[in-house]
Amino acid sequence: VQLQASGGGLVQAGGSLRLACVAPRSILSTFNALEMAWHRRAPGKERELVASITTDRRAMYADSVKGRFTISRDNGKKTVYLSMNNLEPEDTAVYYCNARSMSGAESWGQGTLVTVSS
Image (cartoon, rainbow, N blue to C red; front, side, top):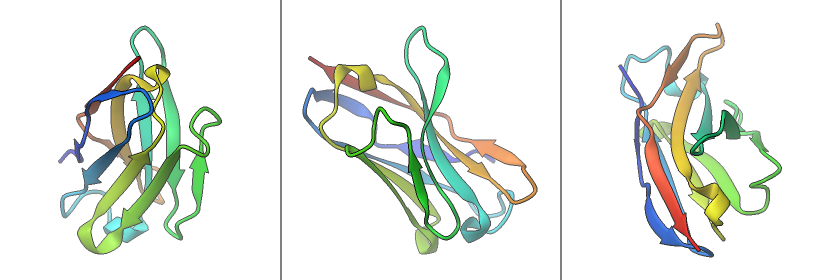
């Protein structure tokens, strides 16, 4: 069962978007036991880790998004969010959410496209 990502779209530089990723029940483990992350793949580039959040809500960010992006989680809704502010054309990419259990098993969402125009 895949994670379900949404919230992508077209936005002008300087704008904001919020991505959401819902984890269906029975995936890997209970949601609050999963480390969640957002990755992205820009055209012609390798996939990169954008942000991650641990089960105790410690967040980590790629240098390129620090101060602009915020990752958060709502365990009751089984959802992880990525709030993106002050978007730049370089943020254009397909964004994927990822879940990882304590055993190392992973699951990926289908991706949501973010396009930032200059």
